Length: 139
Image (cartoon, rainbow, N blue to C red; front, top):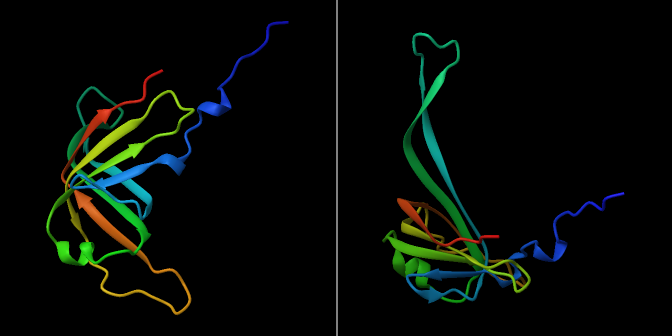
């Protein structure tokens, strides 16, 4: 009987070793980064087709970055644009992935959010205008 081989579980990437860089500066306080691109699909009804066809329209990049508050840098950035580089790495993975989020702009700036006796965290939702896959993970 042939033995089935599946995914090597040690190759599953954990976010533990991930890094975020804002304008080149490593953000050691960050523990969550999410970025997504949505496309505005345009529906086309074409003759000779009984299926709706789709054309890619404008793209929209959105994301959230969060972690422990250690400085006032996000307040000081105000609503200025910045770049984020996400590095997803794990020593047991096939490699690492770096994605550059270009011209990020906060949706809102958090001025205060604290509770006595608890760690202060900071979350910033943002949009971005483009992205670049700098280093893909390839098997």
